[in-house]
Length: 68
Image (tube, rainbow, N blue to C red; front, side):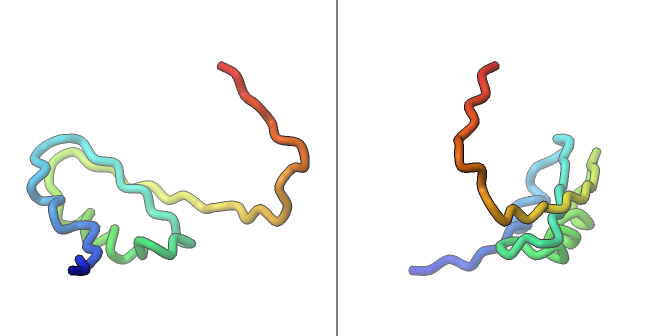
């Protein structure tokens, strides 16, 4: 059985937990209009942010290791 992808189906059940919605216009999996619809449904503290993805045409030949 295949389930339909509905990103905002449970958003109204989350209560007053603060929410951050991040819209990435280039996102092919979750279209921006679906995130906008979910944002309109939710009550309580919420914030909407936009993030643009940079296109990487070539990865570095030497992997970088970050240590924290």
